[in-house]
Length: 111
Image (cartoon, rainbow, N blue to C red; front, side, top):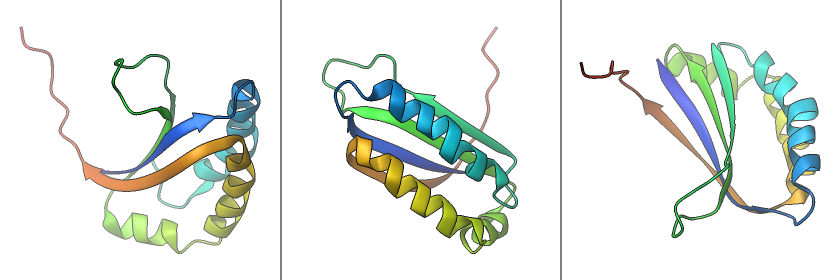
C-alpha cells in the first residue's frame, strides 16, 4: 500500500477555522473519496503540537494499492475539479501544501 499525503503548512485565517473545516468536509472530501483507486481517505486536523513545531493546519492522506493506482488518480477527470475546489477553500488558508508518497509498515505494540 502507498499513501499520498498532503501537508498543509501554515495557518487558517483567524476566526475562519470552523468555516475552513466545514468547507473541507462539504466541498473537498466528497471529491477526494471519488478518486479512482483510492482505498481510504484520512483528513487530520491538528489539535496540539510541540511548542517549536511548524504550524500544520491539516494533513490529508489517501491510500492506494500501488503507484499505478496513484497515476490513474492523478490523470482522472476528478483531479481538475478537486484542484479548482481546493483553490477556493485555500483562500481561507495562509501557507502552502506539499505532497509526499510514502510506503508504511504497521507494527503491533510490543508485549
